[in-house]
Image (cartoon, rainbow, N blue to C red; front, side, top):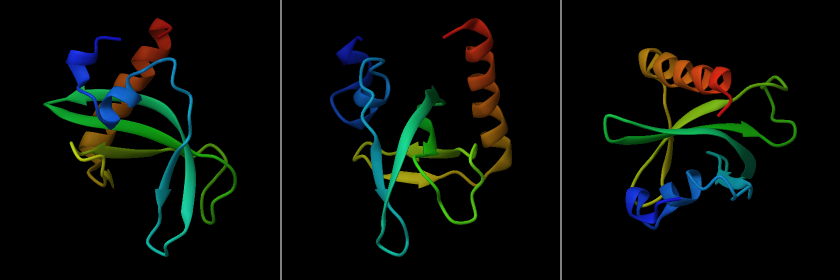
Length: 100
């Protein structure tokens, strides 16, 4: 991977195809939730990633995945804009069809 393309922070990790480590985020109740990365993309200069929970999460189906933005300082924020979500998930499905 080209380190200059993504810098040295969390974005570099997200785009490293050899890094399979889980991502641990803290929910609003202070509990740690473990995720696996499904997909990462840059769109309009914003880093997005699709994460799937590892294990059972209350009110989530087994195959649920969530779209996050990732800030330069490594902060993950859930994307609630359906237009953005559809665009990024569409890119993910296209990548799957291409075998990426």
